[in-house]
Length: 94
Image 1 (tube, rainbow, N blue to C red):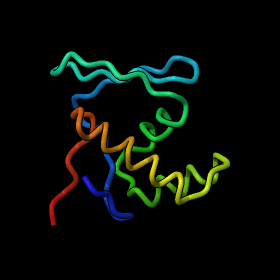
Image 2 (tube, rainbow, N blue to C red):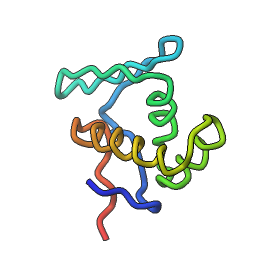
Image 3 (cartoon, one colour):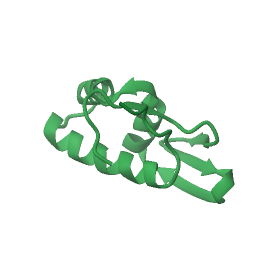
Image 4 (tube, helix red, strand yellow):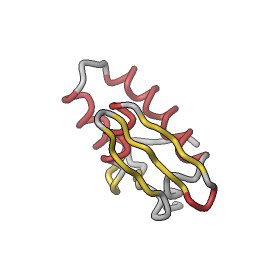
């Protein structure tokens, strides 16, 4: 999936999560799947509350020492993986 700055990112309602120190375990009961997220992945997961991709990137650029272009590439790959696993809601259509 291609993400634009205006793409709304939202966790799937069926996805459950639990924080453990600097990681978050995300569980999708319907698929019996567990995904453990590192600190940055956990932060993206926390921000996936209906914000746009641009808003999420703005927060992360201010919190981590990383260039926005590099962050965007990594964030899009990560979000695509979450989307593919059914952990994110499908964005609204045009």
